[in-house]
Length: 433
Ligand code: PMP
Image 1 (cartoon, rainbow, N blue to C red):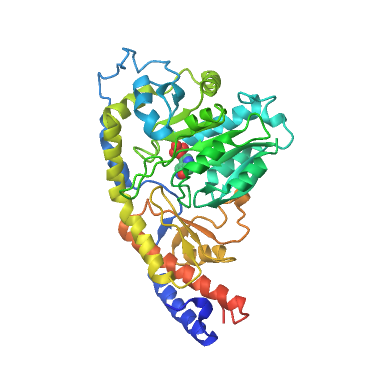
Image 2: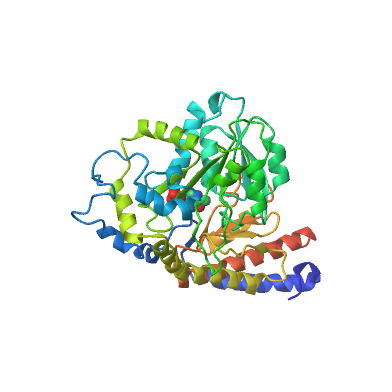
């Protein structure tokens, strides 16, 4: 297909007319489709139906003979830590804490405690620093950015590269002592799917930081969430930091929200001996102990690492066709345009770079056609995408038929906006001509 930029004014107008007819026909179908958030579908949750009957009446004794119904066990059952420590956190079981159901809540607590108390290595609480800041790879996870905004951490955007955050920028900014942390989703990044390279991990662990209490907030949300037969590996951050002489640099987070049940899974924190001691000292003020029956339930259900991997294979069987449907529609409608999109090999999102000044327009066109998209700008600090170009597509929740329909509609919206932008760039009649 001829690139939009190479079309004559006449052919471009013709292309626009055809794109508009296709869009209008789609809109006339009167569908209601939601591609806004990366929620597991009911079918994915059904895969964990067996959990609801576990551990079962009478099964409440842990490996060491404790009664899981009672208070206590702040760090989590050792047998549960042993199951998840390697695959989700790249840590030893003694470096892991099992929290309640949400890793976002664990991140929230770490930020609040850092602000109020400081972390190991802090000279003072972060809130008493002059304008503390976090480095935010963009596009990134909107809820990470919301945490920073909530607690007054300045956000400094860092461009992503296919290998992870741009290290030249990270290293330059991290030299500033007011920079306290860096958000990282090292595997199948939210939203653009990047996988950090070994060199990225090594340099993040080794770099010089201005703040002695700098932390990598290593959110391993998609550690085992593969969409292809290639199970990509990222070097474990905790040993990398220890080897580089910065054993306390990383706080590692993960959960089973997108393994078992999004609202009733297990969340984890992992870190160095000092970081785990710090975390438990704070957590012990907050709770007398976590829900250990849910821990036992997960252990009984998944059993071992092989059980965990087999379960993720069933998740992949449900998810991969939905991602393929999105890619297929984008390929079919948008090849030959300057629009680009991720082809994630894991995780929950497709990210589209639709071209400067188009994202808000596309979200509005999609809304008119009955498709809910994540607001333009959501994947940037303060909701501000300076290029107004990035869209996040979340195909997990709707049925495959709905994803196919939504992908078709979204591709038509993007195409229409791309032609409008091309014509506006040439000062030709715009959308209402
Ligand atoms: N981190 C990332 C990168 C995510 O994409 C998500 C869910 N969308 C979360 C954390 C939330 O995890 P949890 O359910 O454990 O709070």
